[in-house]
Length: 198
Image 1 (tube, helix red, strand yellow):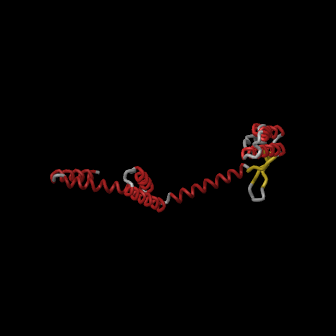
Image 2: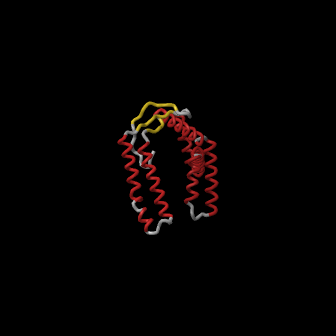
Image 3: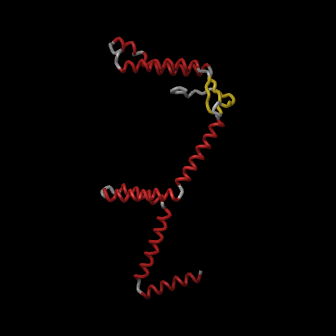
């Protein structure tokens, strides 16, 4: 198609291509071909009108002149091509749906693979290792290892939750041990009474 090819033709029925994919023949009307050709001329003309002046002013051997000449030639060829092209092959709706389903399936498998526990834990270990190394090498930039630490915590969220639960239990035990004996006995009795009542 073209550089600015927003004009579409009407569709005919699907046909099977040599590679097994389904394509449709899209036909361009005379008006559509004329519009595309005029668009190519409009993009080429502003550069083409400066070519004679550039040649006559002694700039014929400069890289800019050759660029303008090449641009003009490509524009002329595009104009001729747009005018002569009456139809083209495009993927059919069935083939587009098939490709979309294949992409969704591939994306699902990729997410499933990277979401498995051993892959997440491997990424978490690498992130924690990078965080520790960067914190040791450059402690002033603490936000960089903090970022990798957050990534590791997200990837190994089960271990983080387990660590938080264990820390909470240990802290609660330490608090109970630190209490006076009478208060600890009363608290233990209340806990037992509540458990029995339930």
